[in-house]
Every structure is written in structure tokens, then in C-alpha cells.
Length: 72
View (cartoon, helix red, strand yellow):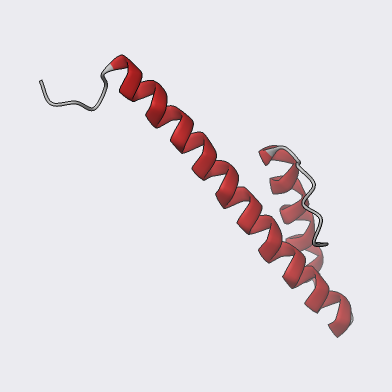
């Protein structure tokens, strides 16, 4: 992935990751393309983790506002 971070949806990033993994698993990529795909896959994993963390934080904020998770 380039240094520019384009904002794609979680689902789009997951689809891109799955496509990359399929190509990598086929074993037909030259080494330079395999290396680039590996680096791109790691970037997608980072983006997916970040999106999950953001969603988790939003859920925690809503739960705190509603009083969920507090001792009675």
C-alpha cells in the first residue's frame, strides 16, 4: 500500500485482503509481486485492526452513556 491512506470500508478492506491472500496461496506470483502482496496484506491488516478498534471505542462510549458495564 502507498503511504497515502485511502479510507475504505471494513468490508472493502477485508475483500481486498482475501483477494491478495488467494493470489499469494496460488503460488504463481514472482518473488517481487509476492513480496509486494505481503506488504500490502500487512497494511490491510493494520487498517482492519484500526477500524475494529474505532468501532469498539464507539460501542464502549455508547455503553458508558447508557450505564452498561457498571457495577449495580
